Length: 324
Length: 156
Image (cartoon, rainbow over all chains, first blue to last red; front, side):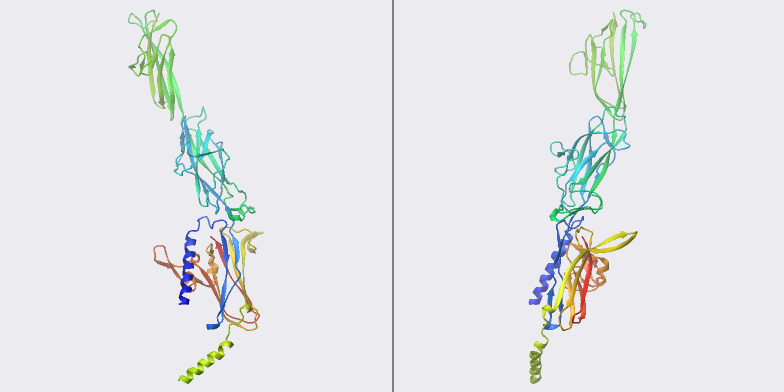
C-alpha cells in the first residue's frame, strides 16, 4: 500500500512536469526560471537497500534579448494628400519581459520621396486598427511598454505626403526596434539586468531589428485651359461693341490622386460686362446668387466650386460677357 | 517441515544484521552543472565546458553526478536516478547513453523502445524531449572506487 502511494506520487509529479513542458514558451524558458538538478542513488538488495540523494544544483535562466520586426502592410500603401497609416509588428522573441525603443526613419536610401512622420502610436487595445485618441502615441525614439516574452505590439506610423511629390513616386519608411536593456553583438551580456534577477544576454537577433513599410504617392496635377468665342450682333465673330464673348475654362486633373478643394475663379475682363446668370458647369446653368448651386457670380467675376477632382477627370465652366 | 521453516527464520534473524545496509555515509553523491560551449579556435570548433555564468535558452548544459565509495565494503547494484528538470531537453547523444523514462520514472528502458501518447492519444515513438528521468546502473563499486554519470541537456 505504501509502495502504491509512492508510485502515485511519482506519476503525479510526472504529469506536472509534462504540463509545465507544454506550457514552455516558444522563445524558450522564461528568464528567471530556476533549473534544479538532484540525483538519487540506491544500492544494496532487498531490505538492505539504501537510498541516498545528491546535493541540488541550481542555475537561473538568464534573459535572452531578441526582437523581430515585420511590416503588416500587404504592399505599397497609397499616400494621397491626406495621411497614410503604415503598420508594423514588433515581436519580443526573447524569454523575458522587455520594452523596445521604436525609431522611425522615413529617409531611406533609394526613396523617391521622404514622407513626413506625423504620429507613431502603439495599438493599445490590440484590434489592429489605428484609433487616434485611443492608441498610445510615442515619440520617435520612445519606447513601447514592456512586452511579455513571446508578446508583440502593433505599431502605427502615420505619414503625410510632402508638397510637390510626383505622382507614383515610391518611398520606404523603416521602423527599428531595439531592446531597452541593451543590444549589440550576440553574447553581449548586461550583468544583473535580466528579468528575474539574472543577467541579460543579447541573442542572435542582436536585440535590434527593423522592417520597412512601402508608400506610393498618389498625387494629381491640375491643368486649366481657357478659350473664348465671340458672336457679334451681325452674326459674325468680330470683337465689336455689343458682341457676346463666351469664355470656356476647362480644369483637367491628371495622375492617380485627387485635386481637393478646387474652385474655378475668373475676373470679368475690363471693357466687358458680365451677362447675368450665364455661368454654366458642364453645360448646366448656375445662378449668380450664393445659394444651393456651385456657382457665384457678379459684375467683377465668377467663382465655381468644384471640390474634389479625381485624376483623369475634367470639368468645364463657361460664362458670357458683352463687349461695351 | 515446521522445523525447517523455523531454521530458515532463525537464519534470517541471524543473517539480518550481517546484511545490514552499509553506512549511508559510505557512498557520496555529488551533483554539478556546467555549460558546454562550442568555440572556434583557429578555425577549429571545439567544445569548452565551463562554469555556467550566463545561461539562456538553447545553451547546452552538462549535468554530472559523481559517486564515490568511501567505505570498506564493495557496493553492489548501484543505481543512479536523475529526474530531468522540466526546463531542459536531454541532448540526443545523451539520450542514447542511459536507460531513460518517459513516464515520470515509472518505467525505464532504452529510448528507442519507449513510446508516449501524442496529443490525439495515439502512441508514438518517444523522443529525447519526452525524457523525464535518466538512470544508470553500476554493477559494483569497489571500496575507494568512484565514477561519474552525466548527461547533456539543452535549455528549452
